Length: 242
Image (cartoon, rainbow, N blue to C red; front, side, top):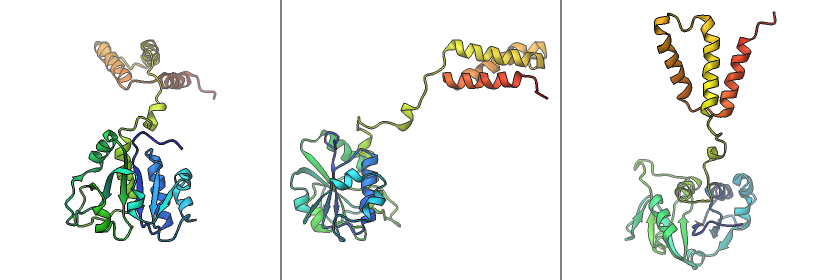
């Protein structure tokens, strides 16, 4: 399973529920991250509850590696970020997911991002292994994110600079209609509206036609949309069968 250049490793430290591991894997793959490491998962590994929650991100789970300690999990990493909503007195640089993503893309060597257990987050010994604290501005009266939410925040920021990912709508957009096609559409509207008195009184005919043209050229119709509208007009122009 290929990975993006410099893509960070996601490390789940002592995760408690298989469902949450699966949801985290799903969040990772949505945004192009594929390398998952688990440190002492509470219910062991593999976990039968993880697969259904991953909703198709099975390759991430199948290639997940299990370690006995955080130190072992990040031993090959030159850059380690610990996620937490509070610094807990640890004197480390503090970065946002966006800043961390930028640093990781420019860094030499592998990078890892640590996520703590669902109930309590990372312990202070875990934080001491990190080079930086990764956190987000959050409501101080409700500073609680579930594991998958935390992973998706970080993965999304990474995805912004990943050339392998595309906006889903980009491949669905049709090329714009040509000016000739638009002129045909406008002429079609005018031909159908003129007998109905739409352009009366004559003194306002030019202004009315200009407004109609402005309306029909403003949205940037695609070729298919113009054809659809022409089909609608043709249908409206037919005599009733009854």
